[in-house]
Amino acid sequence: MAVPLLDLKAQHATIRDEVLAAAMSVIDGQTFILGEPVGQLECAVAGLSGTRYAVGCANGTDALLIALRALGVGHGDEVVTTPFTFFATAGAIHNVGARPVFVDIAPTTYNIVPDGVASAMSSRTKAVIAVDLFGQMAPIEAIAAVARDVPVIEDAAQSIGARRRVEDRWVMAGEAATIGTFSFFPSKNLGGWGDGGMMVTQNEALFEAMSKLRTHGSRRTYYHEMVGYNSRLDTLQAAVLLAKLPHLDTWSAARRENAAFYDGAFADVAEIGCPVIDPRNESIFNQYTIRVPKRDALQAHLKDAGIGTSVYYPLPLHLQPCFAYLGYQEGQCPEAERASREVLSLPIYPELSRTQLEEVASAVRAFFGR
Ligand SMILES: *Cc1c(COP(=O)(O)O)cnc(C)c1O
Image (cartoon, rainbow, N blue to C red):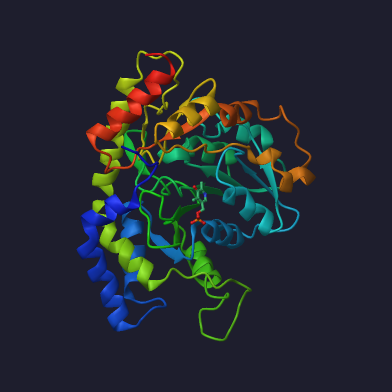
């Protein structure tokens, strides 16, 4: 039987009635723009992420764009970030007129390291964007420490509900940064029926600025203090997400169990590098990403066996054609480059059955002759 990389229909089948009822109440009320569920979801996500304020927006890419704008980042500024992330992280930096400065990643967690951030900072650095990749948080407290008074944006698009032990306390994804950002793209752990995003912060002034920026820079209709965007979170999406939110912990726990199954199944296969979770972190496993030699051959072998996989990410951002103007060469972020050749993400979604997990594991093992 085929095992897809992600099966959204399987999840939908378990919550269909609740989500349809929530969506239907928006449809019956016809309050499609900034209706009540938007504020309710903002409260819930602020609560979940341990922050005081949350602002919904159209998608996770806009969340980064609006965060950068709220911090006043623009032309001539530099923003230090990772080359091993979804394109949006660096695209947002470019689109506010600033220059991405890429620092290499840790070969274990694939997240940026504080020392790298420290050495990449200059007098032009206006922000740092750390990404919580694949479901586990970057060392956000250490990154904030080296950034000193430079604000830190935490791109937690893949990591809503992830947490990290800092000085005997759990810190939630988004909590310790100047601004945290989330995406509700359908493939994230909390996914909507389309696009959606959110920014969170502890800072009231930034909350005010982001609230304005998402509605054309205005608080009072038709009076504009700044030029912003049309980037609201749809009421319909907010209602769907509110209905799904109570299940998030269960889903993320099921992903962790699936990850533990694979860890066990691959323990005796020396060629497979299983995901390394920092002992201070609790991952939500948005992806289960192994690293292997002959990655492309393994991917082809799994495809023939009917198993869906994906390479996140095949070309690091410092080598993307659109960023050629930045002047990076191959060899400048060696760990990101090596990761891009070796990583492969396997099906990890919560609804995977034991049989499906076994099927994936034995197909992977068979490739290595086990
Ligand atoms: C998904 C994702 C985004 C963008 O989110 P969208 O909602 O698709 O715009 C940004 N950063 C990372 C790391 C992501 O995984």
